[in-house]
Length: 81
Image: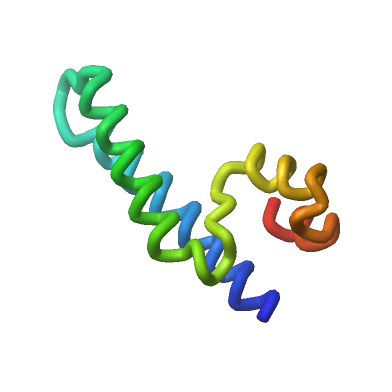
């Protein structure tokens, strides 16, 4: 179960960063709207896709907050990082 969560977390982070970097490279002069909309849609897609599997902590600050709030074990949080 932990291995599935770690693999899910890896793919969630990869797809999130891939979408954001792809939006930045899509045009010659991307504005702040394109970056913001792409980040929002990528975050929602990653959360809905991997939320049940790993919690979708693709942001290390979320993982740190979950560890400090005793919502997840410290060892699992370190593995997520």
